[in-house]
Length: 209
Image 1 (cartoon, helix red, strand yellow):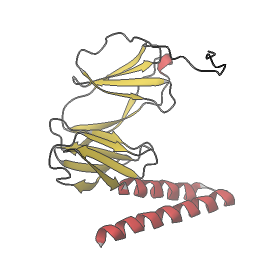
Image 2 (image 1 turned 120 degrees about the vertical axis):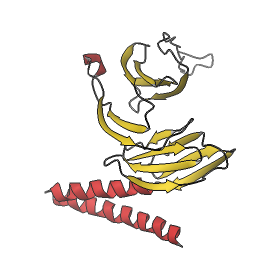
Image 3 (image 1 turned 120 degrees about the horizontal axis):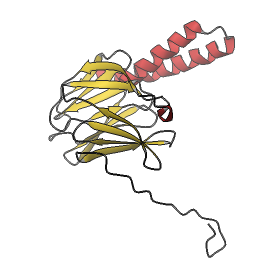
Image 4 (image 1 turned 90 degrees about the vertical axis):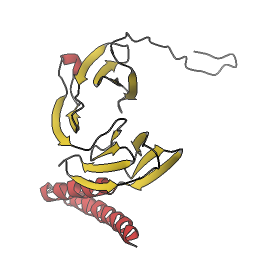
């Protein structure tokens, strides 16, 4: 649209979505592609929508002391459903929070005032942080570059290095290095591995001191 001063602008159009959740909606996210919206309610139901408010998929989870990793890279319009990759036991409590790093290599779960960090590929528990806040943790987020995990609670924010993510990234690059037959690709991967390992060593050395 054209503004009064002659410049071009954009007028956002709101869409009203139908009421599909039976419980209270407690979380919402938009896909990195910008094509889908996910909403989650307190009755453990997750719904995936298109941008016009049509339901593409619905997933129900259980409050059984586990976290589950799903592959959502499917074609919803062709009626393909997300499929379960992994189920991992974890410690949970009322108000637990979970976060997946943007590169899908690390999973963080909070229980009360504690944080547990898992490898997404293996499901192994790699790090534990206890009594992070004086009150229950209210939110967990990874930064967009996968370098840090941030928690909030008791009016404070805590920032942690994503050591699990560094380890997983190095392992993935080492696997690609073994498979590659291209000299240029191998050289680039080796450089990235060296840089990532140096960053990881700096973090772990600081933690020891």
